[in-house]
Length: 276
Image (cartoon, rainbow, N blue to C red; front, side, top):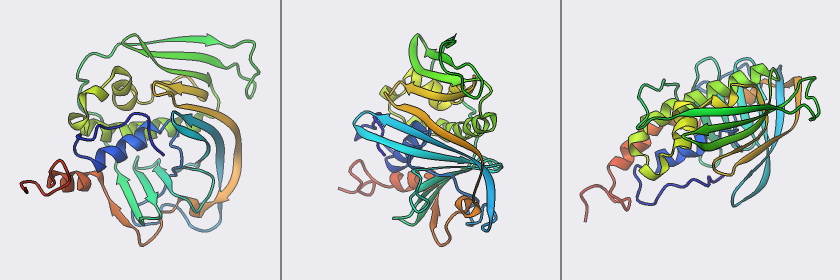
């Protein structure tokens, strides 16, 4: 799935940052991605079932046909995919904060460990928001939805309809996932093109990544990229196969640091550094 915020061709390093931006910028829920377990390939007991909250979303982004995604949340994991257990997925380990992105075609697993954000923004980020109860809207699980607008330095970065108190455990998992991605993004900020370091990106990707999840579960949202996600259905206490939360065995594991090291040896056109 491509993002509408694209990296200029000359930006380096290439592959590591492209993968990380894809994981982060689509984390409004991570379309076509699941969560997986520990790097050794066994994140969860592989037999039987576990109780889960299962959610379905309709998503849209500029230049891409609408698509449907699924999120499965259990006590220790969150998995995101397109509903087919055999497709690629992203697995978030709620115990360790690590993220694993599985590609079956390449037989690879990208591992992103949890890291805190330890740097400051390159410039001041002034946050503001407005909240409006939607008293005339249908109740969701007996609760009144709210219309929320989140601004950074005067620009609206998120518009969302949230339901306070709905699916609190799912919201907690989503917050933790966003924060894990933010830690890795903060490490790459020096390589991020200046034109991409907008107030909305800096705030919602790195320095305040879970801000839009502070007021309740987002049943509808639109962000600064034109990405839209709408909750279509959810079920609680659904028995799901425990094997969904295991990493495949025999796949090659790698980190973004490995890709950065490889790209550092190459010139702008992908040639070894120093070659003519």
